[in-house]
Image (cartoon, rainbow, N blue to C red; front, side):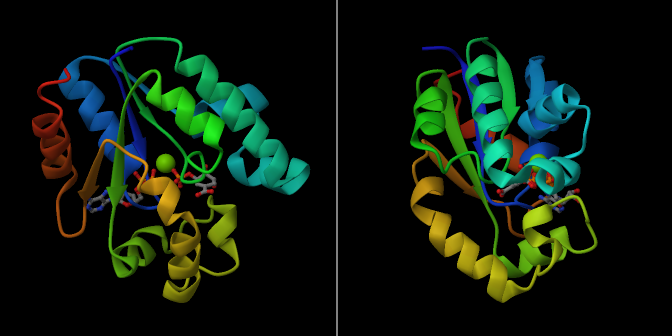
Length: 170
Ligand SMILES: Nc1ncnc2c1ncn2[C@@H]1O[C@H](COP(=O)(O)OP(=O)(O)O)[C@@H](O)[C@H]1O
Ligand SMILES: O=C(O)C1=C[C@@H](OP(=O)(O)O)[C@@H](O)[C@H](O)C1
Ligand SMILES: [Mg+2]
């Protein structure tokens, strides 16, 4: 088993932001899975969704995840939907620890408001829409080694909590 840390969670829970800080503190590589896909495609997430559709994006996401998971000593921030495919969860399990970041629906709504780079919330980022998506995904997010609520905490505090909780593993 490798020593990677995979951050999962709904959009706006802070995976990208916390992941960067965690990697810095550990002196490890930081990999944002969405960024890997964007770099490879030469197009933004929004453009990929628009031109090729969500299914094609999910295939790029799985391919990128399997490849990244083959390397050690990384903090990997996944996209919010990466946990849905069981083979993605298996790839993460086999390569390290899965840390699920959560936040209240109101916190998520506030954090994603005004960001046009999340196609799944572009038309509707209401608390109703977020709640319903969260409900459909909860069982996938629950499939984690550790769950940390980020509501009302700073990015630095969340990073510290992850590091403290994973002490035995690192
Ligand atoms: N703990 C936090 N407290 C306050 N704002 C946060 C926190 N974590 C993330 N944010 C902010 O919320 C927004 C979404 O964070 P991001 O890391 O992109 O989430 P994700 O990758 O999970 O979608 C960003 O503007 C980020 O600065
Ligand atoms: O939840 C999702 O299905 C998605 C989350 C996004 O990443 P973030 O969770 O980092 O916003 C990005 O992968 C894409 O827009 C789809
Ligand atoms: Mg992100």
